Amino acid sequence: MQGLIDTFFNIAVMAQYLPKVLEGMVITVLLAIAVVLTGLALGFVLAVVRSAGLRVVNVLIVLFADVFRAVPPLVILITIYFALPTVGLRFTGFESAWIGLSLVLAAFAEEVIWAGILSVPRGQWEAARSSGLGFAQAMRLVILPQALRLTIAPLTSRAIVITKNTALASVVAVGEILYQAQAAYSFSYNPSPLTLGAIAYLVLFIPLVWLGRWVETRFAWKR
Amino acid sequence: MEALISGFFNLQILTEAAPYLAQGLAMTLMLSLVAVPLGLAGGLALALASTSRSRLLRWSAVVYTDLFRAFPPLVLLLFVAFGLPFLGFKPPAFIAVAIAFLLNTSSYYGEILRAGIESVPGGQHEAARATGLGRWQSLRYVIVPQAVRNVVPDLISNTLEVVKLTSIASVVALPELLYTARQVQSVTYNASPVIAAGLIYLVLLWPLVRLLSRYERQAVSIR
Image 1 (cartoon, each protein chain N blue to C red):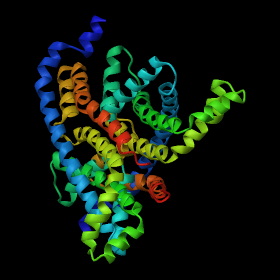
Image 2 (image 1 turned 30 degrees about the vertical axis):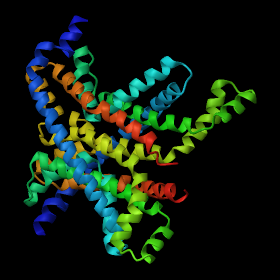
Image 3 (image 1 turned 90 degrees about the horizontal axis):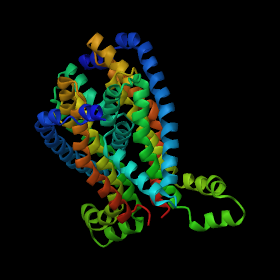
Image 4 (image 1 turned 180 degrees about the vertical axis):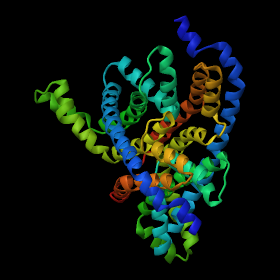
């Protein structure tokens, strides 16, 4: 038992690497916030553009959404970080993770918001337009308020999933929690820093799991 | 344009890489064929536990689910792969990946199946018991089949995520599709194999993505 504690909960090792893991937590939180903001914003814009009904544009949007929903996020990050430099496009690890995860979240968000827009009965559009509202006004004042309410639950769970994917950024050398914990593990050859990293993730994500569960029951997709 | 083609779609390198990528793809498929049934079986057990009458079972299921949904899968995988050897058990990479996937995916499938079971009206169980079926028979022949049918889109969506997730096994050097692609990339200094791997994932998973879009649209249009 003592051996187990020395191996996985070695206080001395944990104390030594705590500052590094805390640093990692800051990076994880920053990356997660950046990804959720840009990802949701891009998904929202794409869904609204899609409802304008321009055929060529819509084909491109659907293609984008399909590609980024089908290809694993890790493959996307590795492509941005390791493959794009061969054609002269260079991004830092943080930028690669930010761009890659934002595109993935945007693809899912676009589909969810588009489904929400579709769910608003056609008559609402026609009534709004015939009462003299323009496209943008009808969208903003009539369609979106009804559409977005339905999308809250699925968007929240997607956003939570994507913030967990920030751990993938460790593969492209971003100094977030997992990267710091792994580095500390290989310096100390003791898995306690990994335990510390795991605890850091629990501290950040258990509240999110609970938030997700609450939102799911509060704003259920079905009525 | 020339640089883009020779850097990303280099036919000569792709011909050399093809046999390795095929082996990687086989490993990815095998891993998926192990991870999905394991996760489903674990998830069903969790769902039954979390809807059972025993408070102890219900609470253990909730704790397990929240705990393993809070860890990013990659964190879980590294913890299993690097931590278990310190307990005197050094699993082969495939086993380590399978254990991490079982812990992670069963909690997701469990949540989905629990929602499914809860969506079956209580009268179904009472009617089944009244016709003389035992508790297990009622679950097996009446409750679970209806529960599964009610959550098919979510099950497909999660299965898509699990197959995509197998790419993280590359981090612990399991030679699946992404790992082999990166190996060939580092030998040839050319990104084509990674791009090809991305395209293979796309071809493999695109039908599931399309199917999901259709389900999503149906879900909002029947309301």
